[in-house]
Length: 409
Image: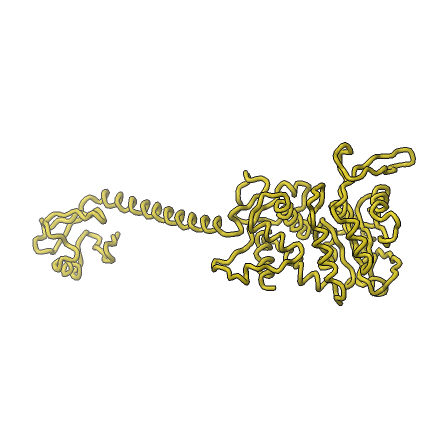
């Protein structure tokens, strides 16, 4: 058996080696008194039987063993305390980062996760909307950096996260961002395999015009669930030959004017997941003379996915001889609708009943700037950057990449 003390070894019989005796004489190890207790190791040494430093007895071996055991336990405790301090520092640093500082916009009782997991698209997505701040540089911004170039959708989205506002539109933008992230990161495929080969050519008057597919509900109008709620117009919907249902419709501000103005330079097609009996009546109200909307596509024209979502596959109605995809765009508040052709999609926040909504005015400017572009997809890709939304690391990472790219443009 050997014991280690300051890197030296004692003999099995409790005697010092010759080199250690020399160290003792130089006061490196051996104490000045004839009997000494070393508090650091719990060793008692005596020279009563070795006045010439030739022999030293090790006393109280049980005390020594207990002392060593206590020191090992204390070392483990000290290590755990140090690790806890380091973890606390890391967690506090993460919590103070601009993307995890204030996570929840609607339900603040949910704890902030240390790592966001990919979300699955659910009907409760509106309730669990995350409130994530946009990235900000630690360096002070110059006046030129503070002057932001107004980009459709993204500028208001960044403002909603920067200001963390509690106003209606800030909350809607944050909520819609979360829904868009969910829709674009949700994996789905057609329920019917025959949909892969579907093709339906629609007559086009002017081949040079860009075609705009407009969603209907929550993009141009909103149908109240309760007919007794205030609305702009009440329409009679023929559900069957013998049943008529009254539907209260809210028209999005500037919807009629938008369609009329855009029809001068674009081909307008309504593409909705609603039933034809309802959507036909709404289209007739928006375009009573039937001179603006070229075609109307309803639920039976959508592609039903394995998750029971009605999506809009543009390639069914667009080809190189009729409507090439570089000359087509889909405006829809639901991102999964244009997930088949991501760069053809144009997002817009949903409309319900707020008459201060001015999104269609901003949309018109964005669409008119599209006139003359060779490829609509490249125009959308450089401005909207929807490809950054497809990121399994979580929505906070999307915002980081998205706003960094916006600041560079």
